[in-house]
Image (tube, rainbow, N blue to C red):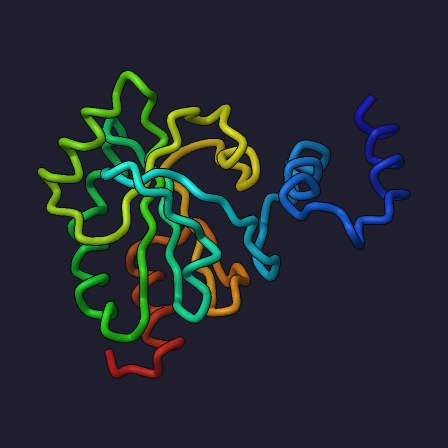
Length: 178
């Protein structure tokens, strides 16, 4: 029963626990509390298109936009031109995008082709475990597109925002004129 599990979870001392495991537990026990704003990100590493592992911890000191998507996702693809424009505008301000594809292993070539077709100039990685992967569960990804805006210290400052909201946030963060 979920109420018993919640009571047990509330009694746990989480001080020295792995934040990734805690976030997964919390998102399963309290799905209604899916906002992660104000929390530290759960770091992960995934392979890019050249099979080089990229680690989120290496993005500290920069503003990071983690964008969960897939090559088959039309809404994801439709917002790419706008995100590309925003990236071009703010990349000189230590703004980085990490696009996390949830394409399956069998669709890996489609992912690679999409990166080329869309002329994606930001960091791209793939999580072939799709929605059942540890990372999708850590970030409570139920649908795509899903995204997280992370500050330079690794704290989530916004989530599931539109390209327009992203641009507004970046103007505020970098104190730039619109």
